[in-house]
Length: 174
Image: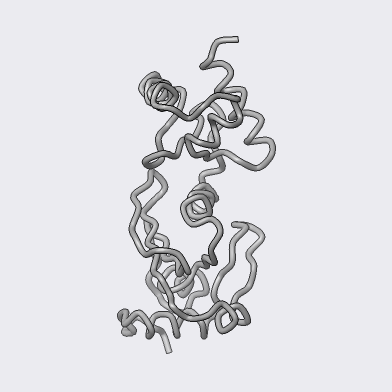
């Protein structure tokens, strides 16, 4: 089997298992090869041929079996900050619950125990905001959203996060 066919086969199996976006390291592991410069060149060449799409540095999706567009950005969030608490909050959550009238388009605001940062993806901008608050203080005010397979802040927590980050409060409805 050609290496590019093997790569597409790996993506097809991963999509059936709920995957769809993978790091170069994960792809190398699934193919049983080292993640060395030659493999990274192979991934870059596959992207140029249109077999893969680079969603951001080091992360790829298959063009033949892409992930669901509605949930792909959440998969990227989980890949970028795995191993730490992340939850949808701030303007994105308040827009989701209808507590602000503006609809946030092309941007997701995430509070994380990891590093802050902004990442451009084909699915929109991911904005991570670090919090120093202890998990024990935050966890009671979160709920799990099975549609995106991530936690979301309750209204009071999202407003508290806005205040803590010194963000604009003028858009709140009440």
